[in-house]
Image (cartoon, rainbow, N blue to C red; front, side, top):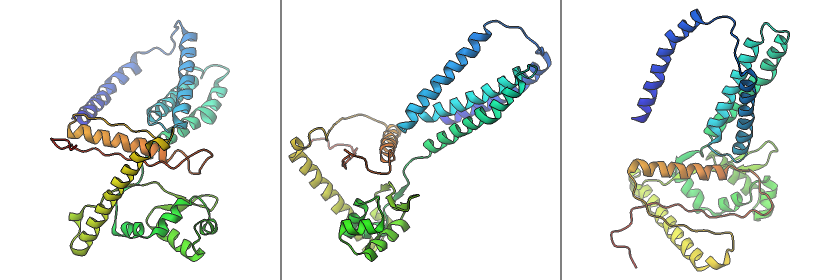
Length: 297
């Protein structure tokens, strides 16, 4: 409903601007003296400076708020180039304005627009777990290999104690399923993914039984992991946190909550590709479900 209303407003604005633009083209004078010229341009440049600073801060932290800000900064640069060239066309600095627009302002605007597009499309690849994925999860070698990434095949083989041929085979299978790829240095790196649970009803016979068994084992492992974390909660120091909340939401609001959580996880998963000193692997779990009417003791 909101999307349709927005599209209607945008289309209506475009239609109304046609006669208004024609009217201005026939009525505006070629020259016009105005006051506050210095304040207008200095204020515009201050706003542009603030947009650059805020965009850099948000972009480095891969915040989604950087997307509209980078887009707005790109638009402001294009406006700056347009008015610099048009308003200075009859002055002695005409070609300076043209050079700045062509060599600086427009290229930077394009880079900012591309950066905004990249940030807006950085959601983790999303797909359902397949039978091939289940087969890999049942083979501990794949877990050993991925835990040692990033690194070269020889390095991974040395760390895991597996043979080089085994490591090459595991990496090839992981690559075919979209879990790893080579970086510019030739090392293998893991690709974070948003894997959805398979639905047993999508399979038949033995395949359905296998998927059901996979899900049963998965949740049994989750319960065991949570129980272990609760028993050892005093041992983690500053490296653990836990929150619990209850909210009454519509299905649409629930989907929005889910999307925002996935966006948050994607941002932190993509923060860097190589390990740094002082980091730890952390287990993060997010479960939202309607509780029973009577909460068990």
